[in-house]
Image 1: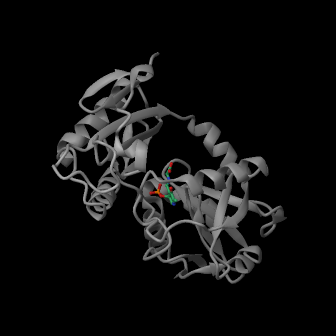
Image 2 (image 1 turned 135 degrees about the vertical axis):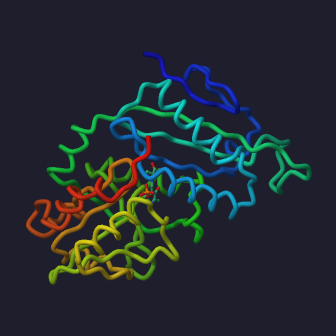
Amino acid sequence: MSRIAYVNGRYVPHRDATIHVEDRGFQFADGVYEVCEVRAGRLIDERRHLDRLDRSLSELRIVPPMTRAALSVVIRETVRQNRVRDGIVYLQVTRGIARRDHAFPDKPIPASLIVTSRSADPVKRDKAADAGVGVITVPDNRWDRVDIKTVGLLPNVLAKQAAKEAGAKEAWFVDAKGEVTEGSSTNAWIVTADGIVVTRPAEHGILRGITRAVILDILAAAGLKLEERAFTLAEARAAREAFFTSASNIVVPVVKLDGAVVGDGKPGPVVSRLREEFYRFAEASA
Ligand code: PDD
């Protein structure tokens, strides 16, 4: 079956899905994106993803390309045309097409919107999570507005490639203070020796993960102890459990950190419980 992409008002075959050479997303990474999970034909946490998209757009002063209701229709239509039951939907909004100049265009231009969707095998994903994965650490060399979900992802790309070359699944950024900020495309968590779940506060230095927000709800409902504070790499090394979260992989246990075993080297009880409970707490919309 051929894939379809939505590009600036048209549904086109994936191979013909192109943008203009002077799209500011292409030339300046002047744009933002969202990734939302599709599970059993339903969108997971669409509302919160679209809230975050609105926030990213407003931080960059990009006028939304259409109303939220219209965007929801485009998202669903893209998922439908690609016959995705389980997978992801990706949306990207850039400031639009204009003669190359770093400053914003003087006259308002329409924002560009692309939406794509693709299938992913949930069984395969669960298998990887059952075993747990390895993470490496890299210096955090990003700008200080990583709370905006921009398509300027070069440090993240290089970090993920370093992880891949090291045989790991993810790279965790570590800042100048020796504190873990987040993963290249995920939020980072540990469980301390005395059973406290720790994750960095979402004010600064990380993306406010939607999956992260759902996990906070689960922890509160389950009465598990949580500390929202920065944790150091040394603490992560001594942790009983570690894991990362994102819309594309939900909750993934980390059993190796820079080649050293975390905890007893197997996914622990806290992470397993979070994986089990996730969809009871996430919002699913048809
Ligand atoms: N990444 N931190 C970073 C840097 C991310 O890129 C992401 C998401 C997250 C987790 O956020 P959420 O739970 O809302 O997915 C944290 C997406 C999945 C991506 O770039 O593919």
